[in-house]
Length: 112
Image 1 (tube, rainbow, N blue to C red):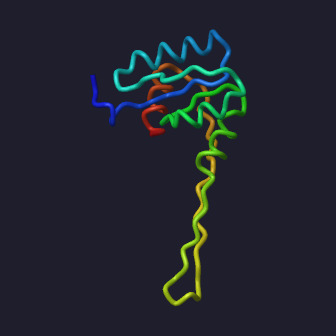
Image 2: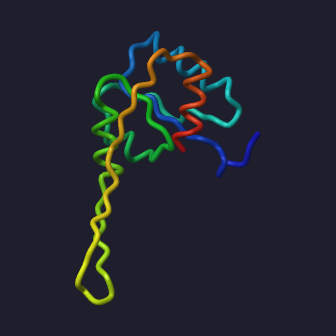
């Protein structure tokens, strides 16, 4: 078993039962991944409290999760105070098209 710091912690949120079980099987076959919680739709607060490395959700809950967790802004002002830069972390959405077990595991590994 891998050290805890290198494991990928995953929360499944608001997924239909059959889909959730398929996804869970894929994750359980990857030795470095753990499903730390399976939550019903709408339980976003608990998902945020668990602070997973990856959230896999049904519907649009992934967008809400990212808005709560990653919508950060920082303003960097130059030493002379004349210029500044706004830095933002924003949700990013990319179609994964046809999803296979191998592709799902690859995407989870890359999301960390």
